[in-house]
Every structure is written in C-alpha cells, then in structure tokens.
Length: 67
Image 1 (cartoon, rainbow, N blue to C red):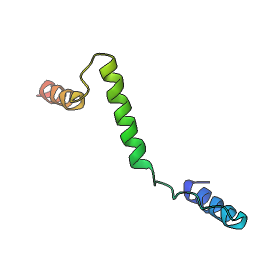
Image 2: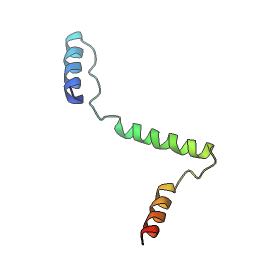
Image 3: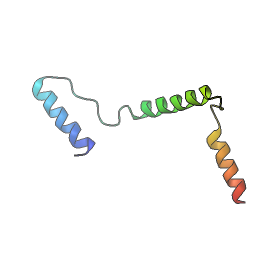
Image 4: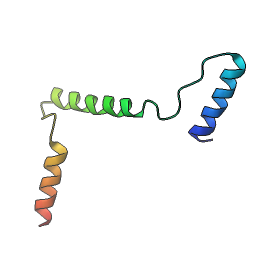
C-alpha cells in the first residue's frame, strides 16, 4: 500500500466516523526538509565547524581535484 492508498483509506474512515480528514500526503515535506537542514546546521555549530558552505566547498575541491 502506498501513501495515496493509505490517505484514501484514512479519509474514508475519517468521513465515516465524522472525524476531520487527514492532511494530504506531501503537505509538510518542505517544512520537514527545512527542519532537517536547520538541525544539521545546529549540530555543525555545536561541533565547532562552519554552519554553511561545506557542500559548495566540497564541490569546489572535487572539481579542482579532477582537473
């Protein structure tokens, strides 16, 4: 059963019981990704590493290593 099937099943059950419908799948995806990004930045600061730019710096190192 995928997320859409589960959503339809939960919506039907909520409607038959008179409960509010569940949120549509993917509604909170952006908020979850932002929270994950913020948590990783926080962990980097606590560990004493720079909070930003490490992906860009790693890509820069990789590009200059390959050339």
